[in-house]
Length: 457
Ligand code: ARG
Image (tube, rainbow, N blue to C red; front, side, top):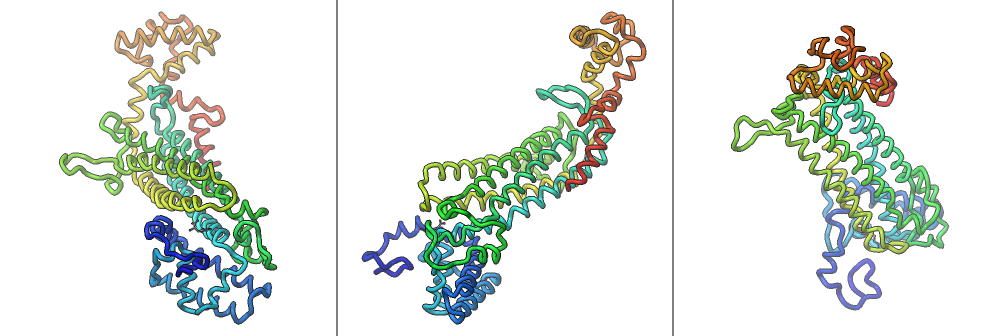
């Protein structure tokens, strides 16, 4: 027998590299609080069902609670020799209360134990992510409310397409974040299930009470199948997938902000608090944070790919491969929460250059659709109207004038249907105001969007 919790059937020591390579304590110690919580629920259940005596349970509970206190005070040290968080805590418990500590593992396996810890860990943190998404949504709403009548070029193919309200643009991101939030809420449902009591894979011969432990731990449901309970990591994959989609949204937003603060656009200015300088060029104010959030998106996708790939070939039930499930999730949490906080701060403090935005809708042909619509209303089939306006745009490019500045006689060369009443319609403000179809950029629609969105935060 070797000196390990599972050492009974071994005669020779484990190779040192195997100990190191196999240990997870360096990262799974993040779940120490959850592990203690799970053990407390389990041992209380063992008492309630009469599997352990009240006396044994009292000793184990007191021991676990003393570890809880010391853990909170930062006084617990873990060792690689004890491999993972579960065996570390059991070993600390044994040091404190003696061999009775060994009764804690009755009717339990590390397989349902680690699954329980990990479910608890993710379940406790999804609400934090949802809260940060909501904070960002609130910041967007506020900025949108202040910018309903701020006009900017709407783009397709990164070419000026049609003028839009800046608030309309912001509310598009609000909606993306709303779906992100809903995905995490759904994710919570799949995380809020107790694996405890599945034991190693097949359940147990002891008369355990899974309802009781689930309730103690605040789980909403219980895994219906013990094999599934110990090998399911869908909740973690969903978390990483939801995080990937969230980061993809933040990354798109970041890309636009980094363009829009550039000399070429000057639509926005980020506050000093959310930008950095250059070590050589004194004039620089770099939008590092949006670049980093865009960059870290790759890392979050990587975490998703990593777990998907790890899971794809694993036979039921527990296999050591599953130990690889945690670090990507920890890393993702450590990344997305600050990313959301930074984004919110950035949105709250950025300055909008309304003048620049609006002017750039006046020195282009983004009112061409207005003119085509005008002709269509006058009875010209839209396809023909499109061709007429196309020729007028070409004429404008060749003679260096915008449509709204072209003399009526020249416009009439395009079509006799054009009258002086066309000019107000060619103003970008009119173009935006008139797009009042549901969900459109018309000011009234944007105000309605904002009002409806407020109910979601
Ligand atoms: N450290 C392990 C993990 O994270 C705990 C479960 C170990 N179970 C086992 N049968 N070896 O997956």
